[in-house]
Amino acid sequence: MAPLIRDAAPRDLPTISALLAETWHATYDTVYGRARVDDLTARWHNVAALARDVGRNDVRFLVAVEADGQTVGTALIRRV
Image (cartoon, rainbow, N blue to C red; front, side, top):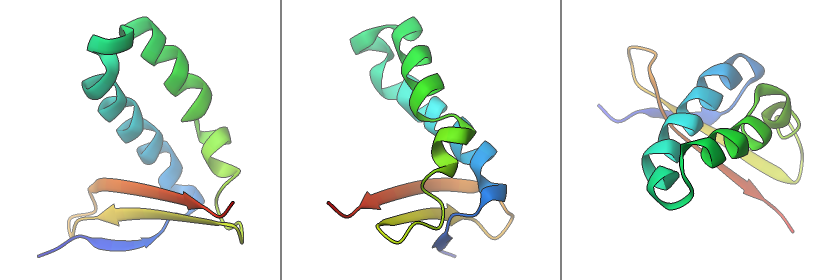
């Protein structure tokens, strides 16, 4: 069964933050180094930073959740 895709809610943010850190490390550690990726994800993907985009009219912030409750993806689109 395909994951449920829905708007992200404040309760999702700790999991989204952890998922982003994990995927950024897997993608960018060999490019920037682990310490730099730690710094970037700490600044850009912390819960407070993510919370600024929840519920905004100019942002669509989505989360993909499996039937067992596991978060498996996220996407954010901002109107410019």
